[in-house]
Image (cartoon, rainbow, N blue to C red; front, side, top):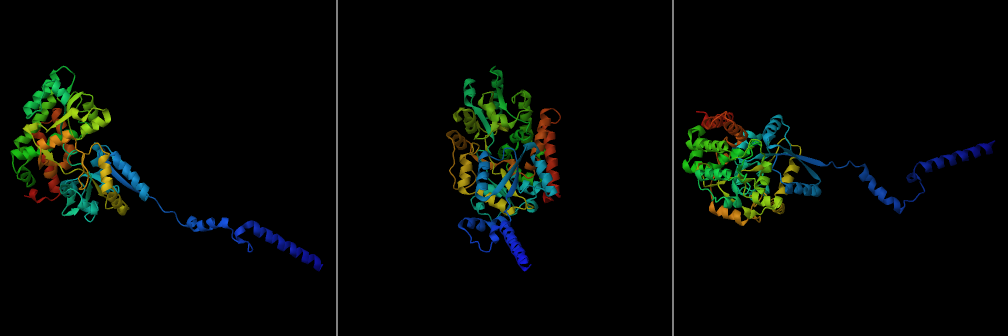
Amino acid sequence: MKKTIYTLFLLLVVALFIVGCGGSETVAPTQEPSTASEPAAAEAPTAEAPAQESVTITYMASQGWIKDAELELAQKFEDETGIHVDYQILPADQYFNVLTTKLNSGEATDIFGGQSGQTDLKVLYNVEENAVDLTDQEWTQRMDPLSLEMVSLNGRVYGAEIWDIVASNYFIMVYNKNIFADLGLTVPGSYAEFKAACQTIMDSGKGIAPVYEPMSDGWHHVLWFPMIGPRFEEVNPGLANELNANKVKFADVPIMAEALTQMQELYDMGCFGDNALSDAVADTNAKLANGEYAMSLTTLTAPVAIESEYGVTVDTFGFFPIPLVDNQLSPAHPAGPSKFIYSGSQHIDEAKQYLAFLMAPENLQYLLDNTDDFADLNFSGLQAKWTPEQQEYLDAYPAKTIVYQDVVNYVNPQWMDIGKDMVAMFTGTMDAEGALSSIDQRRADMATAASDPAWAQ
């Protein structure tokens, strides 16, 4: 009996031992750790530790503000840091309405784009509440002083402007030299000469329209008016200061009414073609490249892009200033598309890191070298790429004073509304005086909302 009990006891011990060995090799008391098991043992803490969360920063911008080279730099930034940049590009005619809604509701993207200029910073974006102070960032020491002023308010820097403030900001007349030569035309030096050139082109029977002026985007046709601010200032010295002091209104300035009246005259003549109201900015280069239009109001770098896209050489095109009211001045225009970090962002540090990355000298040079729209950037220490034709224009028409959307308060924030007024002029529901009065009323409304003392009288 004892022998039987003892035998059963041994069988039970053996069974328990076999079950224990089958459950896990690592718990066998007599097993020595093998070399093959060492990597697994070393990786165990990593597998159990929480995985590092990837970060995505969002950036909302208007169509045309983000260049392909910047998207390439964003990918490089992600490769180096693991921080993904999600660009959200909106149509130009919708952008500012969407941006205003998001800022007012506290739902803005981590970085939001906006045109610089102190009025815009104060009235449209309220940067002192909605944007992060960037005054201490290293790149502010390398930015063009005029550009830096345009992204600053009350002595603090709130925006990062990376733009060609000359070649991409000088909206001027670009004309086809071959068409002009074939028709015996010379560069116009006055409005009367410009109008006569347009008529000659239309009368030539060659099926060429004089000026490609796209209006469907809502903003481009506005350029003709405030861009000739230097001419307004030449005829009326100190006018910008008087406008800002509320001592004079737009409707009180004869040359402004004359400029809009001349725009109306060009439209009525058919100088802008048959489809100006539905034409789009994106088609400008194609229209110039195929010779369908003789001229367009565009940038100094347009011919470079045309050569790249369509093979029409840059020396096919020449330049002259916007000819309304006999203007012969180039505009200084230091304001441009800029980047602001939203104060309510959960990723402020990452957004600052991205802006610093973009403005590293080697990355700015990459952006410049790989963007046809840029001939230079508004930072020191970069190698510009002016063509002989561009340099010839700059030498012939030096910029003297700043465009009115940069220097006159409460103009740039109503840009799209001015565009609607001008279309109303062209379609016969408003005249030049009415358009100027509308500008004055919107200026007064914005000034009152901003508690501008000049309007408190």
